[in-house]
Length: 159
Image (cartoon, rainbow, N blue to C red; front, side, top):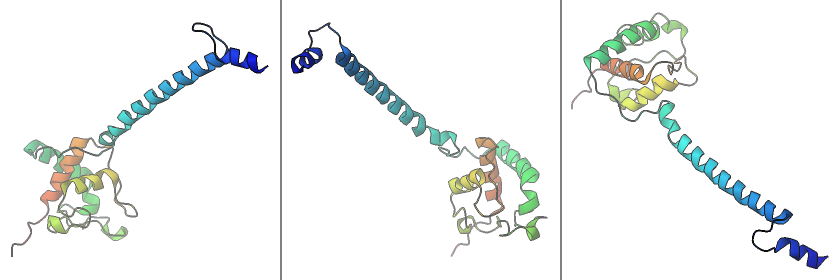
């Protein structure tokens, strides 16, 4: 019996048996697994950019500011107010109250002087507040809103 098992496992080149075929399947599965793993890595490594994580802000242009102002008037005025001071029509009903964009940009609670952080707040919203995510807007539209909102900020005082 042992002799027969050895004969089945160790066969001449070109001869096939149950053990030989099983080994070949394992090798094919390992190759397939590597291909799937590498493909997944490349897919998910570039996925961050498609989920709202922007590379670099676009240049501030008059067209972008016009687009941002229009979007702000349509979507943000009811909470943040026409002047960006957080005194919109819904202010009394919102807890915590909407952000005041007229403060110096580096003193904003959710921006801290960083355009990318403001972009992320617009994209993802702020948990446990009435600030919802605005990811339905294109990346360009969200950047337009960033520039519009930052435009309300007063320059920091020089010492």
